[in-house]
Image (cartoon, rainbow, N blue to C red; front, top):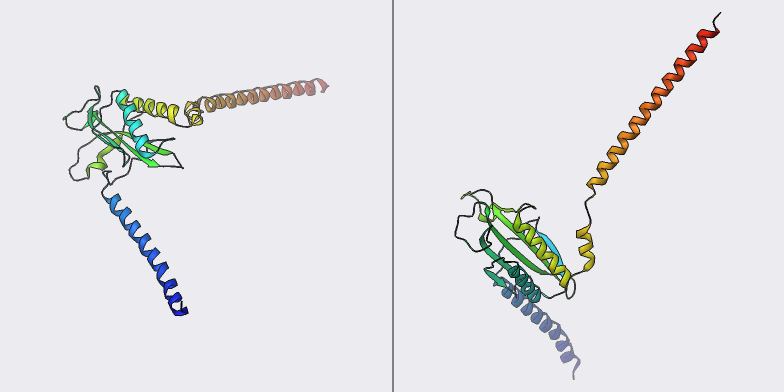
Length: 221
């Protein structure tokens, strides 16, 4: 083979590989553009956990766990990793056509994302709408449910069960740790006690001064 021909092949092969990679990349982007996920992201306050399942398995398991807890669902996209309940009556957790205004009408959404190898990340939010403003995008009206809301507590139980069955048990220990507020309050009480002791010490020093004064008076003829 002539050297010129070998040079031509060496020049053409890298270009062929580059074109193939570019084709695959464009194909992946095109497939991702057809995803049924919403364009917006979860609220920053959404609950997050990791499970040792791939995205379709994690999505299916999360949907089944929610269904067992009587949370009605509208959309379950296993391949895309997305769950949406639609608007629910807060008392029955069944679908409702009531106007979504106030915490009596609620909604659950979940995003399932890739995490470390063989693991997926669950991002679960429970929301309601505190106000109605046609001038703003609907997503901006969604507000995170308060921690003491019955649905929010149920979602906490759902996540706990998912971790117990598919996740890291150490994560449950972190969730079970009590808050440090009582200790800080106790520390404040102790500091007050120290202040009281120093006050008592001052009183004792005053007594000593009085006693020395008496001694001086006695020594005067």
